[in-house]
Image 1: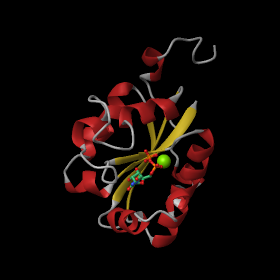
Image 2: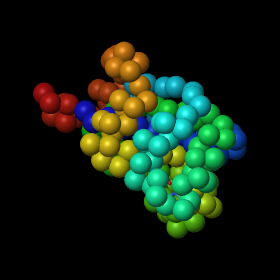
Image 3: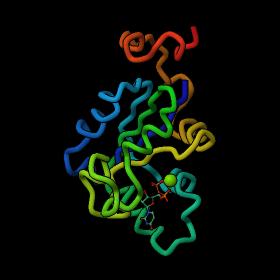
Image 4: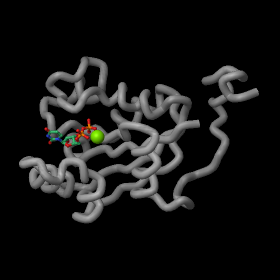
Length: 155
Ligand code: UDP
Ligand code: MG
């Protein structure tokens, strides 16, 4: 099964949207395997947003992402990296489709409520960036049997 990293960003924390956002993934049928409420530091943000360090808006990202804690979480499911990106919506919340988290709750490019890994390589790197291996919970989620067919589960 695939795994992906989700951050509920400081704007969502301030707006009281933690439960609403996490519920989108729960109700879809994704399995929560790690969860943390944490304040990001400079080093972590520099790494996490390394692709944006040269952009003029990078200082604003840093100020925003350190303005309150974030909820970091890891979710598991078949194709869950793409599923979570689709539930999040496109980066610019003003253009994100209604029905997505960003489309339903956001009006900003930067304050767009959520981060989601954008591919398998990023997911693996980002999960390791935010969680120690022993912080990923191994357990049987009972509803897995009704969420998937036997062949999808590999036998
Ligand atoms: N961002 C921004 N201005 C931009 C592009 C991105 O402030 O023009 C912020 C925004 O919060 C975004 C984050 O930087 O979510 C990471 O950008 P990326 O292009 O990776 O978008 P994402 O993968 O989050 O959709
Ligand atoms: Mg990205």
